[in-house]
Length: 217
Image 1 (tube, rainbow, N blue to C red):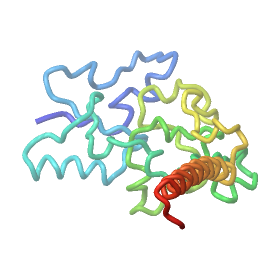
Image 2 (cartoon, rainbow, N blue to C red):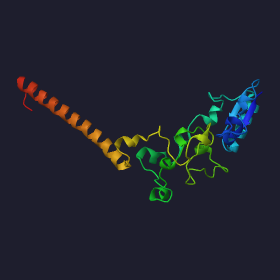
Image 3 (cartoon, rainbow, N blue to C red):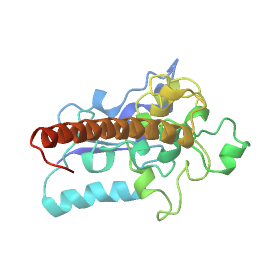
Image 4 (cartoon, one colour):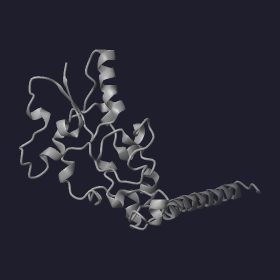
């Protein structure tokens, strides 16, 4: 029915095609042209993902739906970042600055020390590894994007992605959950003030109407 490319080497070429690629290695899609190909990347891929793809094919007698890069959508449809348990720290601007600081001890987001979770599509953060025991981020190490194409040549594993910025950075790099909360309270306070002003105007108009009608309040 298809050729399943297990792992990042067959899917993308991985370290074999890293610059300068002296052996001229290529991914399987450059070799096999006459059969459907399903990519199951990862270095290595998650065992449950591997068996899940085969189980789907045997159960439904068809190939699983794949994305534009030929990866099964059921396992590669979301980023590791989307279900990461450290995501709340990312949104709040709480980051590990170096591996032995207080942020590392408190389990803050690993984005600043190179985590590629925001640009990595895989199931690591939901299925995890070793019977759901753990995964790199839970062990205190950033995601390296090992299931993404060309990850060996994307620069340092420990430098953050410059195109992905936390929402809290709009309040300054040192923004914390408290500052984000204060900003929200400021918006809420403005809304309350507008409501109070509108209510006062309504009461004043009501008094004028009652006065004109000779009604005592």
